[in-house]
Image (cartoon, rainbow, N blue to C red; front, top):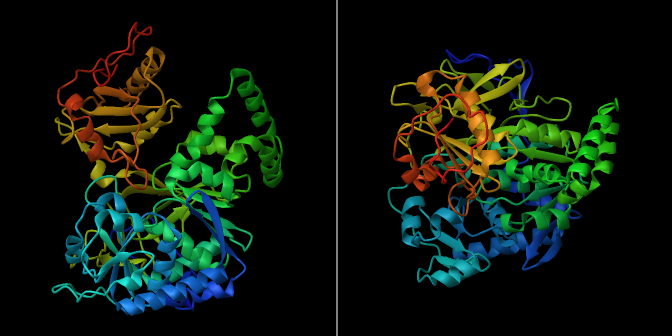
Length: 575
């Protein structure tokens, strides 16, 4: 069924690109019948790890397993509207259980393991009205819970659902899962995802990405992140293979599973850039010459084919079959995007959020490096008077935050969803300029948007991550830079000069006053990155709070020659 576009725009929203046709195409099949497509596409395969081995199951077998899980869940007492928590890492059982809950019209509650590992079951039940909690077998063994409504993920029939918790309003028939948004600051919010909105997005994604039965999509980030599950639903609905792994096995799985479609944060793809820039000098010069020569090939398809053959060793890092690479969750380096293109990798940047799904993306033939691409559909993106990016899909991809009566700062009464990001529309392309909540207010009262400066520093090949802190986190504006190797004199001097160059473009109250270099890696495991691999400002500020505690005067001119020694980590002033 085609959903007509609403013609009117709310007062004050500018820049929305008009849509003269329709806002989107919603699958006529109810999303709750998604499982039936497993039987329809029985020849497709689901690959996953069982220990160290890769197991391959046809969609027909997966369909049978989902029906068996439905039967076990019914024995436990699960029915329409039952809230069922899942606390486990990526696994085949996770997907089977989730699909079974979709079919039963229950509500899955996808609990991130990293934030709920030690949360008591009763606390989780009280917060999300859980009537059943399913854990990985290892987690269940570790905890040995006594509650009859808690069971291993692979044995849901061993449990008995608990009665409803008093005081929890039902989220509505359209809500099929509760998921947690993941931002770079603040507490994650529990988002109620719409079955109608999800069904609408599946058809549009498949159409624009031109997915076919020959594709195999790679799912590796935690399944608690809704975009990962969305890729599974996409494969089930439109009939192409699934390759499931987890982050610790990322590189091993890419090589062994050879997917054709890979979606991940920029860090996934920066591996290729690091490998290329680490080539011996003679090999690097030869590769640079070949890259320049391929620019002379006029046809894009032929040019890409030649590049894939020349740089086959690098393509082997992704299994050698990747035809579409999509990166989001954090801005990609323009240097990475351009290098990947010249190496024959089809890497495209997109922009989205849990509450609204994909908002915009770059695709083959319609790409502008450094932008977030074109809106998913015409008329769905606008810019508020304060520069905030707004998005509107019909039907909405989510219906609100669980337990929050009215979040009108995000879900606006006029039908637009506020993203919290700042941006501009330049023709058909959306360019992001920062986060509203990331604005640093210096002690002099100057407002500084950190993201453009962070991107400029992160473009340097020796920099893994760059984060600006100030205001509540530091006495002076400080650039915290995570390096790929120990900060020797040449690297530190180059960064001093880079900061000095940036400072020349800034008013004095907004200049970077301290450069804090570290070779400590920022990871999700040590808490300095979120679970979607974005820098966590608050965690980084807390981790380096001792180095950030004192003032640091700034000298505006870069040194004329390299210094003779490297200052202790965390004590250097910006030059």
